[in-house]
Amino acid sequence: MSGMKQLSCSSSTAESATSAPISLGMLLGMVRTELVRALEAEFTRQGLDLSYTQYLILKKAQQLGPLSATELARAVELDGGAMTRQLDQLERKGYLRRCPHEQDRRALRIELTVAGRAMWQDTAFACSNRVLDAAQRSLSKTEKTHLHDYLERVLRALRDKH
Image (cartoon, rainbow, N blue to C red; front, side, top):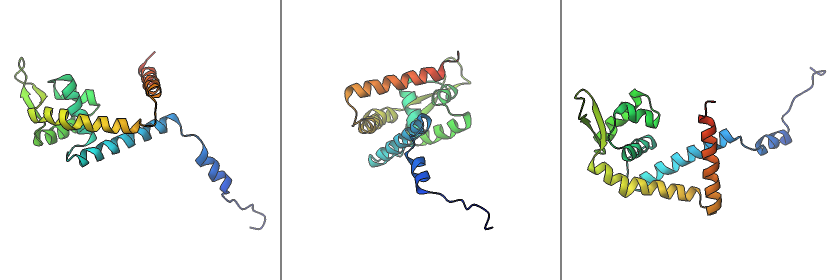
């Protein structure tokens, strides 16, 4: 063993690995994770029993109005089974209901209840605004505009199939 070179980790190697810039993909993932964590914490502080996924479902139901479970699942990018579980929970909480479709008696439409609309307008929307404002507190108005523009352009580039 005396002729074998011993390998060791030097502190300079460890330092260079930790000082390397974070990739855009990792940074975007970390920002999303922290936004979800902060939003759920804010819901808890306000006495709301609401997950981030449930928040997204309620937000889309508020924006789009009554729609089918399939349309809503597509809008929030959930599979059918996961959407059914979330809808069951939100219905038990009194935030939404399944109603018969006006033209197709076999189909159901998902819509917010009066309590769901009130909770959205009075609490969930305000929680979201507080979290997003806090996340951007170190940015000037111009920087916020630029960040939004950059992210929209990245999203368009990712969605462009050509």
